[in-house]
Length: 57
Image (tube, rainbow, N blue to C red):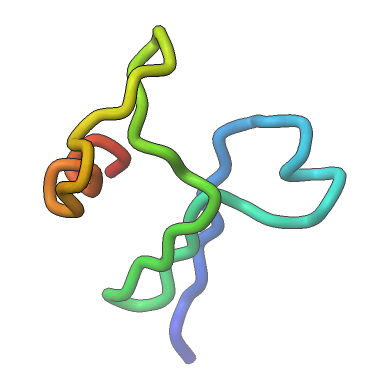
């Protein structure tokens, strides 16, 4: 059986609505509800999926 690992950020909504930022199953990672932004709220890698992915992972 493949192991599943839930990865949370500690945000209050994760427990309230039952989701986590990422789920790892085997060698696959699914990401949800994660935004590529800096501490000031500026978008990182605007219109560049590769740069956004590097920032969130």
